Amino acid sequence: MANKVEGFNFEQRHGKARVRVARVWRNKSDNIHSMVEWNVSISLLSDCVNSYIRDDNSDIVATDTMKNTVYVKAKECSEQLSAENFAILLARHFTSFYKQVTTAIVKIVEKPWERVLVNGQPHDHGFKLGSEKHTAEVTVQKSGVLKLTSGIEGLSVLKTTKSGFEGFIRDQYTALPETRERMLATEVTALWRYSYESVSSIPRNPLYFTERYLDVKKSLANTFFGPPKEGVYSASVQGTLFQMAKAVLNRFPDISSIQLKMPNIHFLPVNISSKENTIVKFNDDVFLPTDEPHGSIEASLSRFWSKM
Ligand SMILES: O=c1[nH]c(=O)c2[nH]c(=O)[nH]c2[nH]1
Image 1 (cartoon, rainbow, N blue to C red):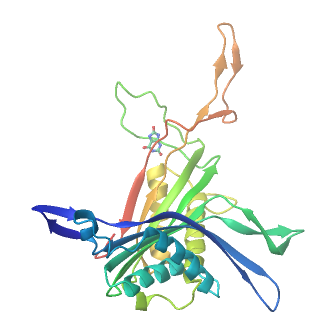
Image 2 (cartoon, helix red, strand yellow):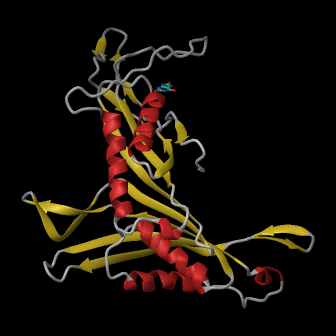
């Protein structure tokens, strides 16, 4: 929210961050439970400049009220829905309920609770924590104009072969040997934008974006790994990142752009020798796993004419 104030440009927003909520749905007919755990952050662009400059709070939606609204709306959701749909529902509430609010930005990080298998059978009410997280962020304007992005955080993947790095610049600072055989490991952060531009145009199925998330994740992982037996050769993290981004845009017509961050997490060859003899000679078998330093490789790919 931008204003001219006392001869300055002034921009402000306020909200509540990290509101944690879990919602359980109990299916009456078969007694199978579903659940989600969400961490919700809300930010409102609203006309409340007087609170900043005149000690007049009469236009403020209290952030405590925003927090309560998360629980009220979670209670009202009698059917399971995606994090995206819950974010849109909240954002629409704030922009339609309060005349002062022109735009609402809602971000949700979903904790990866997954139904457990016991003796190979899906448990009716048992869940365990997975690893990577589903994120959703929506910006909704009073008019209904919408910007929707979803993402994955912390998708750790590794392959023990079918990766190399050759032909890079060599100069007096270069020590890295060229190789066609190395480990490749990364922790993928992905962020993609959907092409829906108004709240009225999003798909009706309340779990549509949950299914899309799972399909995008599968598409990213399958492209990273290649087929189960032969795999696929990676000439660089850069090349693999591009293939992964392209697979998503080629497969999902309602995704208009995708950003990928893929740190190159190094597994260093172990060679140990004393003055007299070799103690451990590296033969693509023993590695030193590292966290830092790591390569940092990121890129975004979008369709022509799309917004990021
Ligand atoms: O896939 C890679 N990309 C790089 O840019 C790079 N740089 C480096 O030292 N190793 C690698 N590997």
